[in-house]
Length: 286
Length: 313
Image: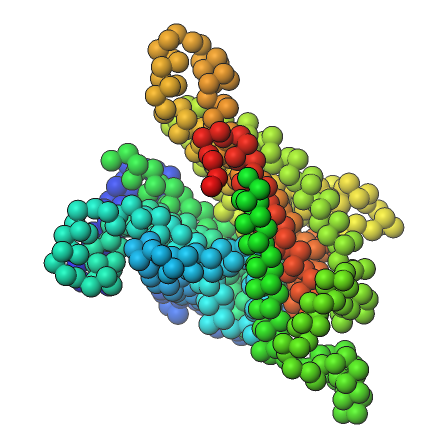
């Protein structure tokens, strides 16, 4: 992306955030997301314990105590530390997956919409086939085969999101390609790649900012679900879905072990979705 | 219309071939030696070689794919290595169980989403609209495993009103109806918010249309405007969305089935994927694609019948 379009994007994001002051619900969403981002950034400073260290003495009463504010899990590991480190890994993986999906999806959508013809037909048929296949079943087949790892999770989530983004970008491109400024760039003799990335892409930003925010929410759910099914990150890494999976069988004895990570992931997704809704609404009204 | 149908059925066929081949190829990518899986870690090399020979696993991948495809065309989906039974005996029972869960959830989602969506959308930005919209955003934001944990800790652990697992067995203390309540509640909670928002968006758009303003200015009462003019147009777009939920309800309920140990299609696919049970994965993938593309085709046809402005070439 050129410096100019980066600036346009930055301006659009900054303006959306400034507009949020008119929407209390949007502010709540932004606050929830900001809370977890700060927690994730400062994880090493906040956590009282190593998230993998076992305190077997605490297992006698794993509930919340002065030593372990949120209690410990079934192996005596400090729940607060695991929660904080889980936020850090989740907030590293989710934006990465969404960014890769956007990179691939935008290029596919621009090429399909601007070039048209057989490129469009081929890209859209491939997208149709990927979209026809149920996402969760695809995740299971792919991840059960290639094993749990952060990279595999990122690629699986990006692979299924890219065709959806391509569809949105293609629709916007079909409209924008007939604008005068695109014709002007063509007359100047600019190459198609330049026209797509520098002239068309920056003008798709409105719907894409809302979509990316929603997609961060979906991807958070998807990665939590993969952790819960035992297909996400390697079991040693603290991750919220995996924490629920490990403690669900103990729910009748120690409900806090499962309830706390569930509340955490819910608050983060609620944050993303409220934020997306507020940005969409504010964008409609001006 | 018939040309349209033929094209869509052609797409279904191509998708089925492409996905089944891809799933086969992925399985080949990490072979994991099927014979070793069946015989267990203590089998001798001779036993493994013998079973590999018997099952024809030493033939090249494309040959085995065509062989499998021939079997499928004659109704033989192969044998599940996990359940040690023909796939036909595992698959359809599981699908019926998920169908029960999906059917009850669908019967609840449709009326609730229509009423809530229309009520929210008929007065945009009113307090009622705001409350319904925010509530639906929050409902769709709770991952299914989280709402499963929340509901199970309240109704199974704390109050003891409902069972925490739903294996659909009759021997225990809980009836099948009681076992179905929590899984259905989780699915409805997760899906309802999304459909409500779609219905609301369509209703809002219709209420902004010039013909509604004309009807209001003509002096019709509010209920006349809504029931005689707005509702019919507002329900066309959500029709497709609602039909597409069938796809989610049957192939997407893996998590709910895993939370409540529900013996359905999704958990079967999870177990098959974890055990690398290729015959079962392939059969399940075919079923999933047929349901996904089938609901899309049904949605398109229904949309055309409802909306005379759409004419498909």
